[in-house]
Image (cartoon, rainbow, N blue to C red):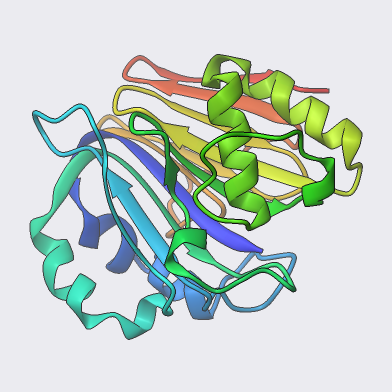
Length: 229
């Protein structure tokens, strides 16, 4: 339904992470290699990052396809961060196409992206959702419950909607949390930092696939994976 990524490590430009790589999010917006649901991701995009010296994240989102935004392409090479969450969107049928529906969502501290789908009727009420789309309601629920309860929240939502796909990425500038539940996620651990992505952005043999139904935590010390089964 979407493609997303997170980076934690040495500062890299948004162009490096989102536009320039051989199978970047830009490429995945029109030619994803591992997408199981949908064929293109042309229903919006978003990038969130933590500027140096600022605790709150900054975001740039759009309801247009990523390939149709030359303004971002012109600025991305001069914006850099050591913690980034970015996504391109393939909207669930019936969901609105609007900027506020594009990930990443935020509570002012965390950035969160959802790759998948969930029945909105299966979600408990949550405050301060940025949009009526399923991903925004799920993000608001996660923020309400707290990111330390991410695994528990995903299991509860999956129990209420057994057909849900709940791949989440969240970052607060110092760590990244992720879940796999029904869709793909790969990890790349290097001396410069760690990337998590719906699919590898190049053919580096160090990419590894994260098992389904896992909780992942990335810190400057490395990556840990815990089963959610």
